[in-house]
Length: 436
Image (tube, rainbow, N blue to C red; front, side):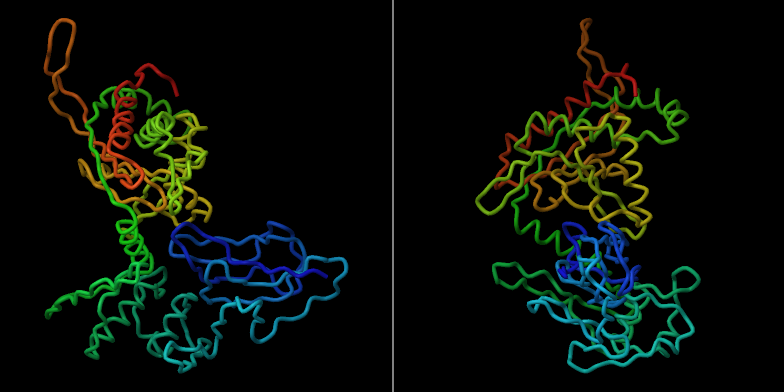
């Protein structure tokens, strides 16, 4: 009988670990290939993990509530289902395979960072706590009795990650132990200088959630990895505005979906990438990888204030109507926390609509390992000079700024500037008589 490891899959380009929420299958259960085996949670999505092989789930290596690194084994599957009899029951501790298995966080006794186990019996609790909240309680030596006193801001008064982290920080401040802010350390080995914040009476201390910490680290890394340069152009998008105003109501009645400016902008970006394919690249050491597919990431603001970047795979293969459907679907599910892991990975170029916040322009930071990102400013009415056969006139036009940040290691100013200018050209020459 052949045995294979089920590995914690990669959930996105900036996700390195996930929390086991629930095992859908139990040891001894027969499973099919691509059948869901367990549910996991990351800082971005909750999702189901499918089996990579058909067979019998022999052993579970990661218990519910455990935080597991991407690439670590989480279960053993016996693939020869006909030759096997009953699958063995799971052992009390997971067997290590080549030393790669991660230690399991036990329900009753968890190894603390200082080596002292913290015993917590959540069966005594009268409230529901998520696996992540339980893990934080163990790590911070918070008893069940303490948890019961925390006021929850979640549904039905549940204690959220934010609630327990605020409680932890308040407890530390009360004990006169304020932890310094942790900064990302460059891989070169040179430590980043730490600046101690000044705290005065009445100041509120807010603990970063894991997603914000991850975003902060990724932004620092991106600025360290790539020298950023930003080129700006102003585009006359009057034709786009007038065309959308003319067709949006009929489109919504016919398709049951809203026609926003975003898919129109994405279409223009895709056409410009086709004209300048060397903007659709990635850097691997001294090598340049020219990407075949055009996968457009679009930054979406979440209710929490964080940003997430779902990816439209093969964006050049969609019509404008198709782009509208997928843009709206991804945006809705991003805000509801229902994106799938593969919808956050594989981007080759990104757009960020800063105009939705009323900003006229921005200087976006690259999503590594991509080399280009465009910020779309707010559309504003402005007086402009129009050159007509009968002479120049001043007219009210709809204008917007496009900001293109790019990796100056591999994208020179000429290419970066011409690419964003081409996006503006496509928007300015938009066919006002086209159908959708």
